[in-house]
Image (tube, rainbow, N blue to C red):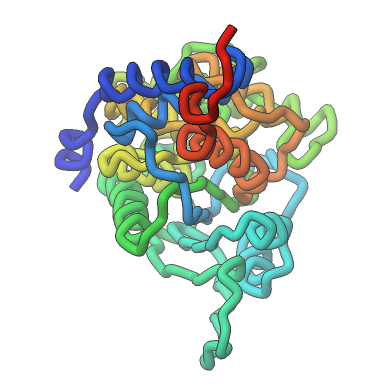
Amino acid sequence: MLETTVAAIRPADEAAMAAARELHGRLTKPAGSLGALEELSVRLAGLAGVCPPPLPEPAAVAIFAGDHGVHAQGVSPWPQEVTAQMIGNFLAGGAVVNAFARQAGASVTVVDVGVATPLPTEPAAEPAVRDPAVPRLVAASVRRGTRDLTATAALTRDEALAAVQTGIRIADELIDAGAGILLTGDMGIGNTTPAAVLIAAFTGADPLDTTGRGTGVDDPTYARKVAVVRAALARHTPDPADPLGVLAAVGGLEHAALAGLILGAAARRTPVLLDGVIAVSAALAAAAFAPEAVCAMVAGHRSAEPGATVALRHLGLDPLIDLGLRLGEGTGALLALPVVTGAVRVLHEVATFDSAGVVEK
């Protein structure tokens, strides 16, 4: 599945991009007056291979959840059980991602790819009218949490591959169900540590520049976290030319699955709106598998985690919003969604100078 997905990823369509730029030049606005929105709509036309590109709707958030053996190194003050407890909160519709998804009219799917503790079960009886912002839970566990990456590889290559392929499968299912844009989400206590290792591995940046405070750790915990990232890099010497090997050695199951989701979206020429540092660390892996996958990526926001900026710079992506967010779940991507939709809607609905009878300068 991974090989066929990568093989299906194609470069942006230059003719469609040129048509979008030409159309922008005829719309009733000064040239370039919509700033970054214009280039975003051009990129989306190149991805779709048509101008104007399809409106990016409906939106579907995919939250991949997993736990991490490196939690034993004291990199997070939160107990590991919180991962499963937060999934219960998602299913009850009480998390921030649920609130933002309702506002955006987006569906939410939670995928267990490696949660360590037992999960709550969904109600046996479905409500007559289901709130799309209350997630469905997909059971796709590869293993109950990763191994401690400071002691051994976090995953075997087969486990990492299984997680990547889960992400591809979820992308296909959501797109087949009608999604016009996918949004990345994540849940996993301690997952900013493997994200920092992944970003350092794929970009060559120093761990001090890729490691943040996650949920807001104190100075001693932060110093320990940086040391853990350095130790993991020294132990495994991950090779960015072997993205599956990097994911296996130092990644998390949700990182691998998110990489798969991005690849699956790119193969289907469907945009994928990236959330925070977990998503962009996974995006680095996706780009290592298939450089043209970047064409499908839209950076929703700039996470407060410093590694996110390092990763976005490496990918050549500019975030749409910068609000100092560091929650994850897909929250930043959901807030950026109207910006993406607006950029495309301009090409569909704004009159040209000729059609509106407006004199050009």
